[in-house]
Length: 84
Image 1 (cartoon, one colour):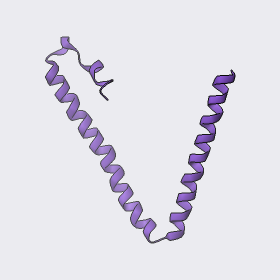
Image 2 (cartoon, one colour):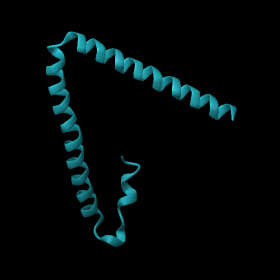
Image 3 (cartoon, helix red, strand yellow):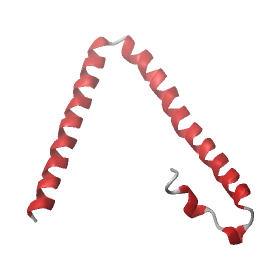
């Protein structure tokens, strides 16, 4: 964030502190919306999964399989970039 933030501040566009404050508010609002929505969805999903132990196991296995597939694809892509 600190690496990308300064590129959006332009001295010719006005006071730097005001631009930084406005960008800070925009970032805070969007982060609250995204992560707040995710927290609400996770809380609702937890309630559903707590009542269905088999669904919880199935979801855990599906996420584990997805992580294995992503790791394999990452490894394959790494080998291709070295070999090619």
